[in-house]
Length: 183
Ligand code: PRP
Ligand code: MN
Ligand code: MG
Image 1: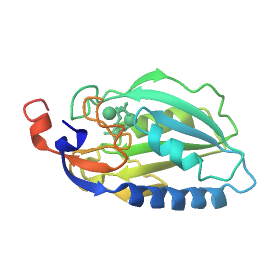
Image 2 (image 1 turned 90 degrees about the vertical axis):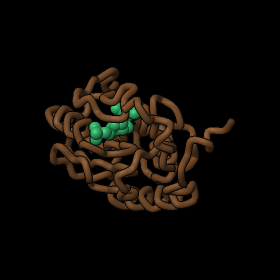
Image 3 (image 1 turned 135 degrees about the horizontal axis):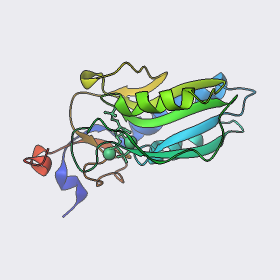
Image 4 (image 1 turned 120 degrees about the vertical axis):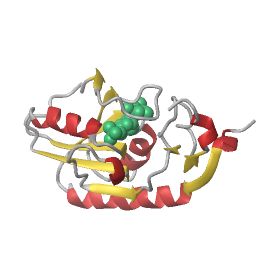
């Protein structure tokens, strides 16, 4: 009985993810040279990506986290974004970078970006490891995308199904039998 038994195929192996994380880290290091951005992770999904990414950014950055949830136990978004924990820091006048694991319908990030923009940051950019443009319901354009993902149910490296699989070091496609009849 292994977590791997529920995975149909590996979409992004650990090495590919880590290579892309290093590239994005280097890109952000250059883009924010001379600045001290506030990097905002959107928990829980963004936690592994955020932890790896900031260690590839050579900047005097600070970390903060928001906890939001829209999916609950379902495979489809409820469309209602719940703020469970807001930022600790004020962001007025600051360079803010939102870090996400995935943008799907876009509802989570649209809501979050609008919320943070009303607080008048100096700049706000969005970095997402995966972009899944197929089911976009609102207009939201990430500034940096790790991979454009196919329209499959992906788990691992922060991405969950019913809170499981976040700890896989790679991103894979979940076997449909795992969520059959529950979606
Ligand atoms: C997932 C994912 C993104 C969001 C993307 O979070 O981590 O935050 O959904 O979907 P959307 O673009 O359709 O809004 P979820 O709400 O499942 O919470 P989690 O990060 O704790 O898994
Ligand atoms: Mn999330
Ligand atoms: Mg989730």
